[in-house]
Image 1 (cartoon, rainbow, N blue to C red):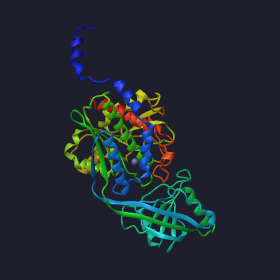
Image 2: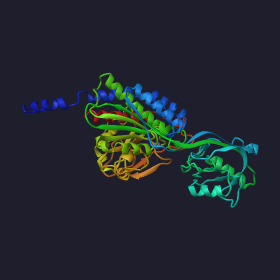
Image 3: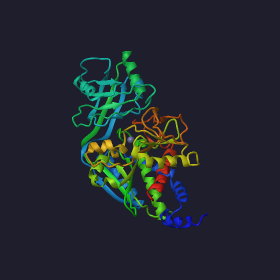
Length: 474
Ligand SMILES: [Zn+2]
């Protein structure tokens, strides 16, 4: 070794991290507990749909705050601006006549912002084939209930609607896709989402001339409510902060185990693992503060956060958002979005590298890749287009979403040039986005999502924890 190198090394020594990177990463990975992740999803799912501003939303925020405190974080609960919210209480929907169809309706769901309905019986009519007045009847449709269709059915005298949209035998065969009504306290009748099997069987029976009588009721409260956003801080020794977040509500209004109790469990598990590494002296306090945030209501809470903090957005070094990390039908892959945003490059490069470093190792993902923007989750609120709409200072905040499934069917999208991951085993230049069969449905419950494939949450937790060990201690 030439002598001149020695002083250079000495000069840089204090700048090198004061812990062994590989030991810290390995220790973090061993701390991630599949049982804790599973238990947290079960606890959250049992509370209801956790819509921000409803009793189940408040309950979930209180619970998240208590867990964060237990992990040693500095906790703050923020009340977001009031908005119209609807809280399910209970509902009944079944066939009373003919008796042979009594058990036909299963896995149905009362759509959010439905109107309440006192227990009654009514005749079913085909809303897509019959015309004219249907006073006192229930209408069946396989269409999505748009505002216009809803108004038309109300005008024709229907007392309730049954929808089995998307009316496709390959999707939601035995469970219901959930489609909330527009947020309003003027809605006059309830909408029940039913499965393809339920809807198509009812339609066939009616076409054959069977008279179908339903028993139905709906109890729902639409009020103004304030979603609660929970922030848990792990203080850093220097300037700057990272945000690790997930929406705490089930956006469809269904049980929301994968979307997004899994994401909440992931945020909590990253917090637990990193706090533990610090407490046990494996790593010092991070240089950057890490804020673990559970949004009370998807988009609107993140928007409020951005507006509230408009004068200190520049301190955000990166946003890592979890949305749907609990399942995946066809691949065992971790996805990191959005690689088409140029200023996401440094942070996505770290995630991509973590993806490659651990892919295929015992206890880690089989595949990992970055992918371009698809839209539709909280990380977008921190990106330029959205910030411009919110009229806050223009700041370039790297903001990504980590997930294992998106939407309700497999999507193929072109890969962004220059972003091929060695951990991706699919076709070159095309990314196959894995999906959930239970996306926004009445069966987005633990037993068929997070309990069936709990390893997804483990992988997503490990990837983000390890990436933070590479970024927030710099
Ligand atoms: Zn979501």
